[in-house]
Figure 1 (spheres, rainbow, N blue to C red):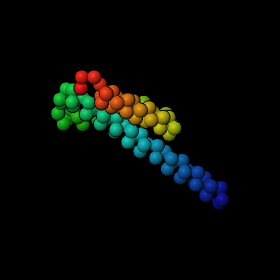
Figure 2: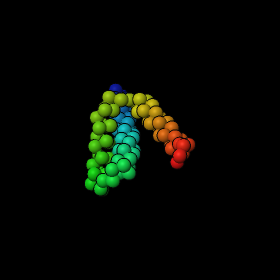
Figure 3: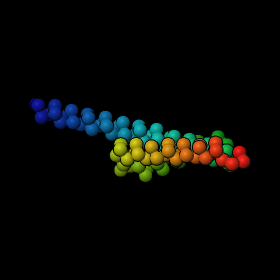
Figure 4: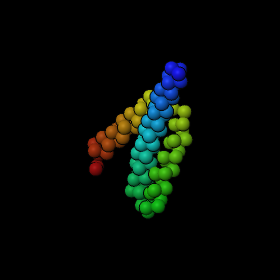
Length: 98
């Protein structure tokens, strides 16, 4: 009986970790999709359906690419994306002739 309870505790722990990782990947993929959709909407000026399609496509692509990634890899990827975003923001603010 004790072995069953120990196994059940391990399964609950691994399942909750997997759910957290999937939700984290979903959030990161949505943020990437929203970013690319906003960039595309400003550059090309497409409509609402294309905007949503871009978000869903980027989200699905990110989930497919990051299928085998662990939490630490997703966090490092997120940190790199944030740093690149801050670098681009700094370039836009300091750009000559703006």
